[in-house]
Every structure is written in structure tokens, then in C-alpha cells.
Image (cartoon, rainbow, N blue to C red):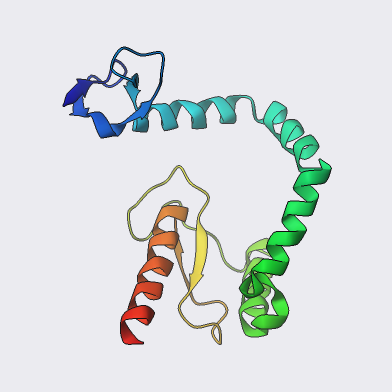
Length: 153
């Protein structure tokens, strides 16, 4: 089944729309991509409000406890488990901060320009050699690596 997005006018499969129980067909009339775009634009337009909201929300006791538990459950996120990784990240952040390295305006893989780019290290022993990628491409790179590791094992 297909549906037309009222925002972009494209006809897309029903899976391209978020579910919504109040709609006749059970899905929003705006596609997921247009919805995401609107949410990003709203957050950007009202950034002070959302930053204040996020600060208050982050201090809620159950969220503080959840972050502590997450850090304990995920040993790969602790600096002591991979000191070379954390040293490389710190050197890269310092170089960016000091203006020795500048982030390019777009992702080196997909050319997305509306995201904050991540510096991806292929080799942690070379901390200033990174490829600049959007969060989606960065996740894909690591998912690909994990899949390759599973297949090799």
C-alpha cells in the first residue's frame, strides 16, 4: 500500500510513514523524512528552549542513575578499556579546538551537510588522521566492522 506525503507530495510506501493511531490508515500524512526535517528545524529555531529542557531532564535522578549503570554495563565505553582510543579522541578534539584541524562542511561519504560531523579513526595510533562522517555513516561503518568481525570468527 502507498500513500502521498502532504508536505513533499511524493508517493511512498506506507512503511515510510510513522504510525499514528488517530489516522484512518494508522499512519501520519507526512512521511518520516519530512517529519524528521521538521523536528530538526524546530529544534534549531528553538535551541535555547531545548537546551534548557535537556539540562533539567539530564539531572533527573533516574536519568543520572541510568547513565551510571550504562557506563558500568558497557566496558568498551570506559577509557581504561581502550586507552589508545581515548588518547586519539582527545588529541583530535584538542587539534580541532586549537584550529589545527578544521571539520569539512559535509560528510566525506554521503555529502550530508546538516549534521555535526564525527571524526572516524581507522587507526588510533594516527590520532589526527580521520575521515569526517555524519552520525549515520559513522554508525554504518561500525556496524560493517562488527559484521565483518562476526563473520571472521
